[in-house]
Length: 100
Image (cartoon, rainbow, N blue to C red; front, side, top):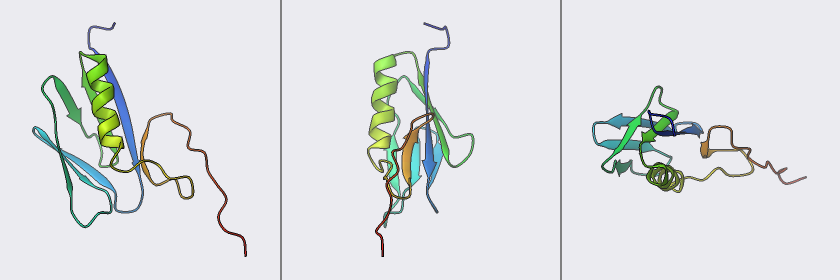
């Protein structure tokens, strides 16, 4: 294990979708009628270098992965437009739309 711990990077794709870290809270705007407030657990650090990237880091690998999965669960990437929250480097299987 590296001395800096573990890091997972989430990327948000979609018009008007954004994330903003505010102290111990992560504010997510994901196309719902309300903002999603995610409380950051103890021992986890969340940074938002820009409003479509979320960096989750911590010492406990399991906890980092769990927090990343919980955030991703709000809007999983969908196969038609690819909108949603995905892990960096994740491949989204794209589907073709309806044919006329």
